[in-house]
Length: 281
Image (cartoon, one colour):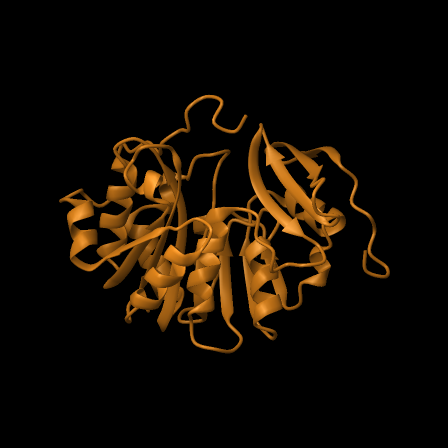
């Protein structure tokens, strides 16, 4: 542990929306998992923020690593353990972060137990995703990371055309949006979310492990979007060469994947997919 840093205490902690369990990683001295209702929410290594335990977080980091060199101005919708802010601050010193998280007690837990104060130039807005995004200045972000879940389900109000428009508002012209979503058999929610994103952003890519991409099992898919070209060739090679051997779908292949699905609009009766029972056992 760093000097002056208090050792985290494993156990159950009450937060605004339930309870969070803080679990020590027995394989890594400074690795910690946040879990809620048996669903892993975040993993952080307090001494090595570049260590990323979850495969989908590694895919997001692959996209971030290929952005233009230098510090980034970031907005993170969904806080958890602030894994990506820690990663970006370690790999791109001088970066700034706004984290939008509706659970103020969770923010306090992460601040006290997982040394959130060690992340420089980080500001937290305690609000839901849409209300918090509305407070961010126009054209102020190089990167927006949308990784917000209620348990294992993405809030549908963060997947609509209207919300994508607000994200576009806060992104700089060459800025990048990253979305973490989850889906399973048929990938119907993924197709509709991609139809929504492609309606706002000209350049879009989808990344996931092949079994998830084919809808054979429930899991996380990553969307990268921008109004300028994405480095899809480099991203394809990097994703395929990683531990996940993920696929990168873009261009005509992505159009075929969407297959005419309708964008999601505010008020549409859309239900985000729920994982099958015992998937996290």
